[in-house]
Length: 199
Image (cartoon, rainbow, N blue to C red; front, side):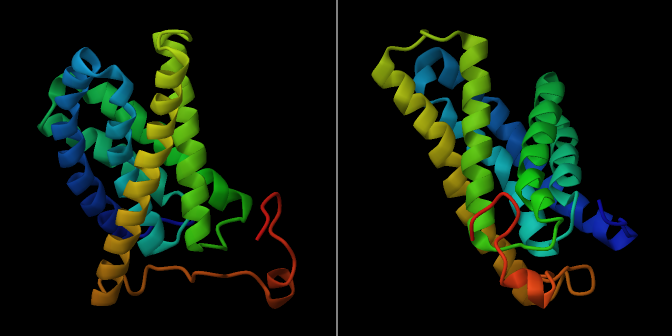
């Protein structure tokens, strides 16, 4: 993680608190969806990707998804205090998964396709984890496919929306001075493929 200045932390906190309010509201939908249409549960998970993607896309610094996701989870307690630890746990886990593709590039490459890759991989991991918890075979094969597909499509859609929001905030200049560059690789590295990732 890069050094976290006060301004960088405050930016993460602002994004995290806004995301946490949404986490809290969505928290009340979890039992309703699980009781009425559990196969659609993956639709809700995308919301948890929003603050991390906004922070990463806007700031382009290592660790900001983890910090923002954690703050969002804590902030959710203002709206949904009963599920505080679920929000914090999911915020931490998704924040960590969002960091991984950028960690591979040592936080020097922030192109849109890496955000999409992070969303797909993290969505698959989250879907698989929840499926293991509810028990494999809980759904018929077709429903299971829909279930996992929603865990991938929802984060992908929310990531796209978060990138649009981050670009809008970027245009205001609000994050100027705390942002990293989109591509900080050295000229010689730019012509070589990224480690473990094909460009």
